[in-house]
Amino acid sequence: MKVAKGGIVLAWTDSLSVGVPTLDEHHRHLFSLLARIAAMVEEGGLTLDGLGTVFAELNSYIAYHFAEEEAMMERAGFPFLELHRHSHQTIAMRVADMAAALTAAGMENAARDLHGFLTGWLIHHIEIEDFEYRPFLVGGA
Image (cartoon, rainbow, N blue to C red; front, side):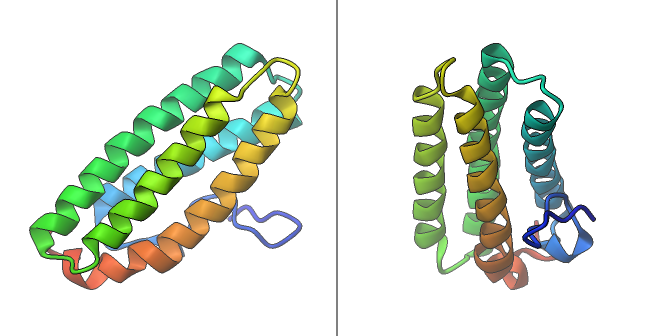
């Protein structure tokens, strides 16, 4: 497990499993994008094209992940689907806004802001919001 100085988990751990292998794999992929952002900043390989590519992949992947997760929740009769969907829409808009504001002059700040946002969001979203659907989806997805 990789942990930042502030105690924030920076890599996937089994404690984040929602009990649905497909969704766990999706979450692992999101953590891999987080690691790519951190590596670009820490290793000095940050470029506008590189960060733009990560933003594009992130926007695409969260749309895919959210659609898959919501479809599973709908099939399982998850009673808080609309609240979860709203959370997904808010996150997708925030990442899209960050991508749209990306400039060469502000790319290091954008990378750090995106990394900080994703770190906080992933942990909160999985441990709080996604864990709510576990009893509905485990074994049925």
